[in-house]
Image (tube, rainbow, N blue to C red; front, side):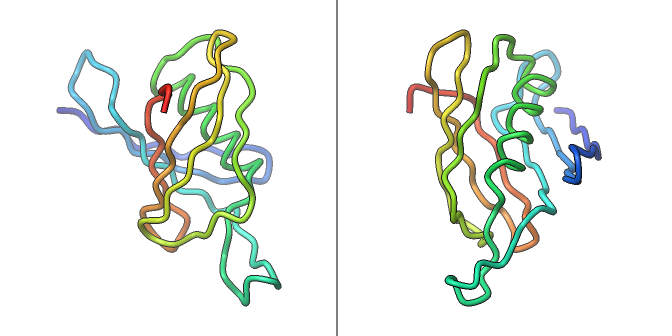
Length: 120
């Protein structure tokens, strides 16, 4: 088993990632911390992810951690609450084919886990 932690900035987005897996194999999931959340007045003070920040984080994880080539645009739904155990799917183009990436929120501080692209 191996573990890797890193801190990176994307524009005004600060993220960190932790990778756990077996040497020589791609990890099953990568955990990311996103500090880009905004309270939505309509949601009574609940924090939600900024989709563009999550999308950039997913592209970075897929290309740099999972070593997937041909990663195209990612689209994540708006209004996803920063709450433990909340999960949602983002769409991603990989080699021109539409795939889905499951995002699972791990903490109320914006930590989330990014799964491998799948057919769903």
